[in-house]
Amino acid sequence: MNKVIIRFLLLVPYITLLHGCSSLFYYPDNKNSFFDPKTAGYAPENIFFTDASQRKLHGWWFPAQKYPVKATVIFFHGNAENLTSHFLHLAWISQENYNFFIFDFPGFGRSEGKPTPQSCIESGHAAVDWVNKHKAGGKPIIIYGQSLGGIIALRTAIDKKSATNLKLVVADSTFDSFREIARVKLSHYWLTWLIQPLGYVLLSDRWAPRNLESLSPVPALVIHGQKDTTVEPIFGNRIFEKLAEPKTLWKIPDGIHTDVFSRHKYKYRTKFISFLEGLDKL
Image (cartoon, rainbow, N blue to C red):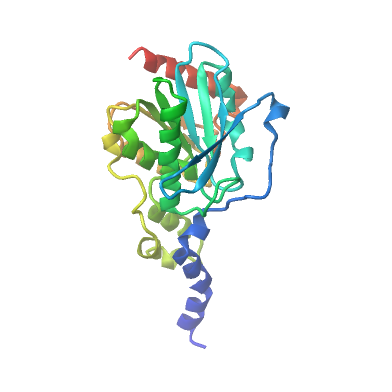
């Protein structure tokens, strides 16, 4: 058999994966509960709300434990599993002067539907709208996106900026282009190196964030571990370069993927609270 034909046949599974981009990017779990917040001393309120497509979505509300309440952090979590395995990344902030809200995208956990770029953006819009209407109490909102949740959070922040008292946007271990991260991942292996351009042909950035500079004058914080092999540091640098001032970049020297608040002797938790207090003085 011709060598060219053999190589093409070997690439067919990868082309198929790219063409079904939703299955490539989303790995939800709607059957398992991975961690009980009570074992960590939390008792969140179960929240149910609907998005523009009338999907019923689920979230957890953690009220601030210190007063006065300064802001509400809305957490757009990363890929795989559901909020029961992601809430500990930031639930600790509710022990300070900040409310904390985490929700599941469609198809994750107890949220209805299936995850797609559009449905995830719609769920982000609905989460921000729900907090604004029911819990914010006029206080500012912080949108925090981590890993896959980051690209959704950035787009949501741009879309909702004018309708929200937005204090800060955080992009943690994330990327801003489905096409570009697919291309980079394909470039890592000799078998898929030749089909890198298909990342641009078969994937769409219609629901990715555009005009990141338009977030200004809302402050933005980009966090990226310099040893992250899941979403390489180049993506954090790319986001930071596109943002307009005021913007801040934290390069975590020994950081891997989404570990900024769970390792490093927790020093970045203190640094983050100090960073937020600095914003209050602006």
